Amino acid sequence: MEQSDLLLAMLGRGIQHPSANTDEWVLTPDVEVCDEKGAHLLVRVPENDNDPNSIIGGGELNMLAGVTLVQELNPSLVVCAYGARSKYLNQIGAPSESKVMSDKLTAELTRKNVSVPPVEIYDEAKLGADESGTNRELYNIFSLAVERNITNVAIVTVAVHLARATLMAQRHLAEVSQFKNITLQCYSSETTLLKSAPEEYSERVDHVFASQSYIRNFEREIKGMDDFLAGKYKSVASTTK
Image (cartoon, rainbow, N blue to C red; front, side, top):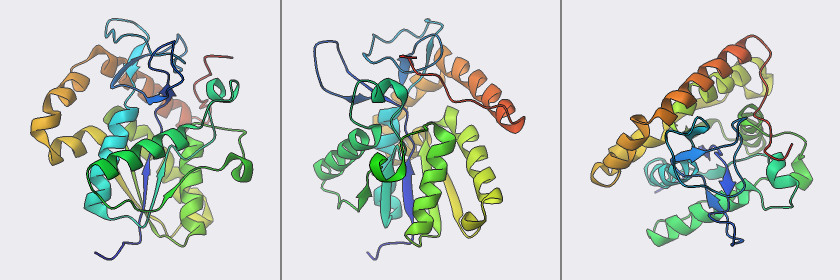
């Protein structure tokens, strides 16, 4: 199949160590306990939906949905968590989320015997490392599309995050002149996976949508959109700040 004029972007949701005694890095789980500011913990703790700091992580969900969309959309270029490292990673010299997520995507596509499209890892030395967060990540994605003469962009993220991400994306497309020719597609990770393999993902998706963590995260997303529209939006602070 001929490759399409499409950049597929899996938005970042964080990485962490699965335990304190390993150097391994993993993507955030479906339901994630964060710190009191909503930032990722460096070392994962057991799931606890009743914890007031538990929200939706979903890094792995985004990557798995990306695998499905690679097969469905046949993108000409793929990016994962396309932005600078968050402060909690940068301050300890950790690998970038873009590198970790891209490696896991490539490994999962290979395991499924799916042809791996070109995957671009964010280059902090070239592109800068002074800012992270969804709004900047989207700007980076659109900038890359323009650089590569790609006019169609698809983003995928967990459902609870999709409205805010779409709002930010649409603002970029409306206000940045070089982005005016880009067409945007938006996908929910949970519904993408549920549509492609309901027998495999229905219980997992139900667990996310029925959780108290989803409700907490939804409330934070609404506040984030209100703040963004009011011009006072700030990214979540780092755990190490």
